[in-house]
Amino acid sequence: MDAEGTRTFLPRYLKVAEWRAQGKSADEIKRLVADAFAKGIFQPPTKPGIDYMLSTENFTPNAKGEVVHFPPHVMFYAPYLTNADLGLGGSPGPDSNPDGPAFVAGEGTPQALIIVPVGARPGAHH
Image 1 (cartoon, rainbow, N blue to C red):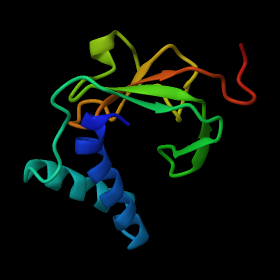
Image 2 (cartoon, helix red, strand yellow; image 1 turned 30 degrees about the vertical axis):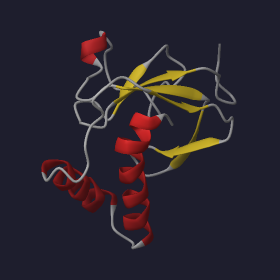
Image 3 (tube, rainbow, N blue to C red; image 1 turned 60 degrees about the vertical axis):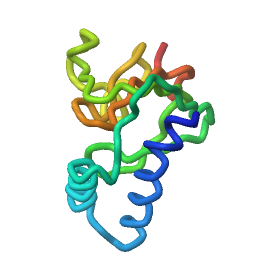
């Protein structure tokens, strides 16, 4: 994570981990994050930046709350960007096709990221 990510993303990641450890639900955490952005406690990035997740051992929750494998990837800060802004249909990612060229995670939110997979998932068909 670069300096901008450390300033803007890291505090949110740490607080979300704390809330999870306290047993808060995904919906509660979503509301708490939105509230923290509204109050200025969390801030979106103010300049471009990048975060690398190049491990082949990445796991992330999908929309069903299942923890699924996710390929190595790089992430570019893109506050409020949507998949439609990039001309992408649907919402690719852990719930559909993370092997596509790119997609926006957290689309339309202050913490949106352009995700670019750089490796295939085990079992993915190419």
